[in-house]
Each structure stands twice: as structure tokens, then as C-alpha cells.
View 1: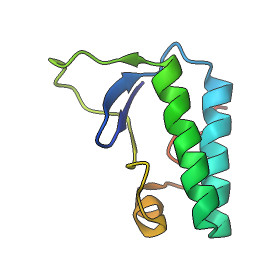
View 2: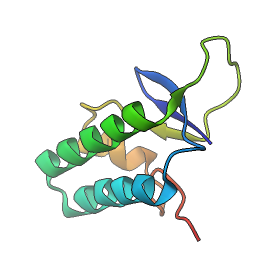
View 3: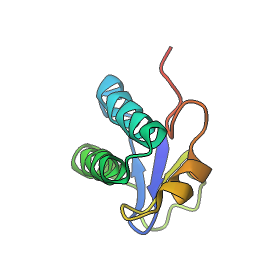
Length: 94
């Protein structure tokens, strides 16, 4: 699965611990639902940091699509809401 962090590039999260990735995504979604902009910023930064630390950067010459798009770390609450699906940014693991 390829994740694009807007402004940072694409990352392959196939070998990332999926439950941990989902936990970060759920925390972002809960913060957005609460309307607490500081919590949204903090949790979005945590998700971004987790991906940067654990995922593999996709080579610059990769021309394929991203499966998931995560907004800029300083995105507004409204911009983030536009990108969320009913399952957050990352589809829930069954």
C-alpha cells in the first residue's frame, strides 16, 4: 500500500505494523470528530512521524498512484475533513 504525505512524497507501508498504523489513523479521525484543532494537529503529526520512521520511501521514478493521501501536517480542520473517508485515511483492518 502506497501512502502519499502531501508535500513529503510517497511511502510504502506494506511492511509497517498495520495495527499500529491503524491506531494512529483512528486517533486522527477521533480528533477531527471532536473538532479540537490542536488535537488534530498533534495526531496528524504523530501519524506522519510514524510513517516517516517506519515506511520505505518510494523511489522518485515511481509513477504509480497513491492508495492513501494524508494531508499536509499544517492542514486546516476543513481540509482534513475533505480527505477523510468513513474509515479515516486508512481503511480499517478486518
